[in-house]
Length: 121
Image (cartoon, helix red, strand yellow):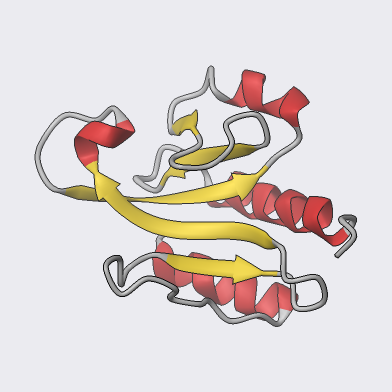
């Protein structure tokens, strides 16, 4: 899945549009629950070296809220890394380079939304 596909999936599934909150990072897009305003996804482009990848330039990632029980096992799989600039106990990052299937990304987006939906404002 790429950024466009993820954005369309989130918009169609949850009825929310991404927000660009930082002028310094125009390609960072936050998705939050309409009711409680909690974030459940962050699309970003980060330096490849920060994602543990070889080469120059940037790569796209998505940060998702995740059950801490799942984070440990997900980190053993290619395409996953500790959350970039988020709490590493409750968020995980997925490198959007094709190593993680679209179905798994969609499932984890839905899980992230469910976790946030349960949070009180």
